[in-house]
Image 1 (tube, rainbow, N blue to C red):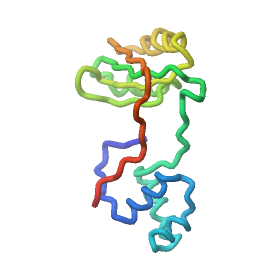
Image 2 (tube, rainbow, N blue to C red):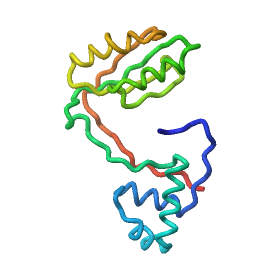
Image 3 (cartoon, rainbow, N blue to C red):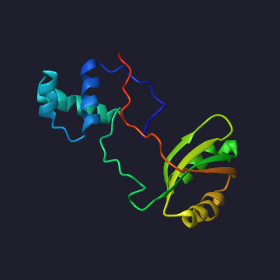
Length: 159
């Protein structure tokens, strides 16, 4: 999970190149990355473990919800009672349909990305789960018609 409550330390070029190699293929062996960078395998392993431990990276399989039986995806803007924001966010985050949740500024207090089996499932989620959370005042649902771009290959800023 991304953390915004701690100050990020700048990554040095070796860290950045390790991350870049893992973005290409998260299964790349440390020995192969080390050879490419001209460093020891042990150094890559230690750097990798530090990057994971400190929350800079996660190496996971990214599945395609559309192909996994969840063709209905939506972004939901949620307005809540401000004094209960954190509690409400934790309750919403626990729903299995919610795959991404952020606290935000602007019109909505929370933005939730959800995946559902179909429109009936989405209606059930909205009416029987989301709207039953105490403190949820209002929502607006934006159903995805087509995903035009989804990327995990952005480049970290230089040190």
